[in-house]
Amino acid sequence: MRNVINLQMKLGEKDIGAIELDPKSRDDIPQILRGLQHIYTEPEIRDRVFEILKELLPNRIVGEGKADPNNGRPGMTQWTILVFGVLRLALNIDYDRLQELANQHKTIRQMIGHSDWLDDARYELQTLKDNVGLFTPEILDRINQEVVRAGHGVLKKSQEEGIDARADSFVVETNVHFPTDINLLLDAMCKALEIIAKLAKANALKGWRQYQHDKKQLKKLYRIVQKLKHSTSKDEKKREKKDKEVQQAYQDYLTLAREYLERAEETRGQIDSVAPKNAALLAELDNYIGHAKRQIDHTYRRMIKGEKIPHEEKIFSIFEPHTEWVSKGKAGVPVELGLRVCVVEDKDRFILHHQVMEKTTDDQIAVP
Image (cartoon, rainbow, N blue to C red):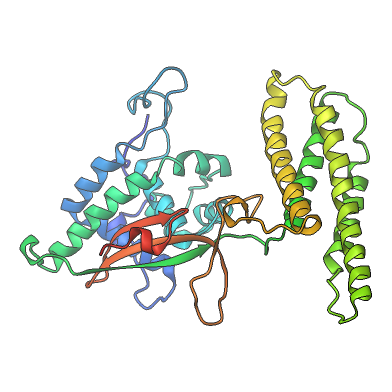
């Protein structure tokens, strides 16, 4: 059972329209809550937004379609999902910080219907993930359109006036380290070794008790390769000697990585892939093994064979593979790692539209 908002207020609960927000605060949370408060206190926009929120329903566990909002245990109200979803996106925070705000921030708790006293309700991390995950980009975009329409109404703008808008893109940086062939290979190998060790232990298989030692051996060779540099000497013999030293270090690193991969794949073949306890870990293992094989190939081709790896073959993060290498020509910022986002806003500063430009450049979405 799920409602947009609980109509019956609890003892000690404060009406959302009566919540006092510090007008002098320059923090972003009061500004976000003030916008949500405006949506709630204006009947016209509230009714339209609430109609959209009614679609925030989980899928049925058995059968197809959405769950019936009139049956089952009481779930998180759709207004609460809206508040949490807007906070998570506007503050660009993870679920851990959202949980802390939901359980400890007094004003946010008032905004979602909790009283100041005798209300010790707490939100578990998985509960937040399951419910806020229903707040899809499509739902957000539709609510944004209603908010913009209401904002234009406040400014007394008519449709006949038209809209003067501009579009600009920026890079939302992902939380990744600077990528190189060898450190991406190390990332993939470390995760593969950790997962195969878990699977071996869960299935009573031998050979991976010292996986931590294996990781240290791999990191040791990685550090050697990392510190080596090609010779800049004008003496050809010295350059050749140094180049051979560098190539040998890379060969040693790649050889050890291949040995560990062969062992991991051999152990993987002994694991029951049908057993439910193994399914998720096997999928992760296959993913990291695939990443490791690609990085071995790239490193070998680049350092041993002297090839140049095409940009479209490269990946810039094992853990956030959507990360792109963006060079927009900014002064002092030669490279940004993340995703481009295009934002369209009108002259009144209302954001009309946004688009995540995955594998897309500015010239491909520009309107002539």
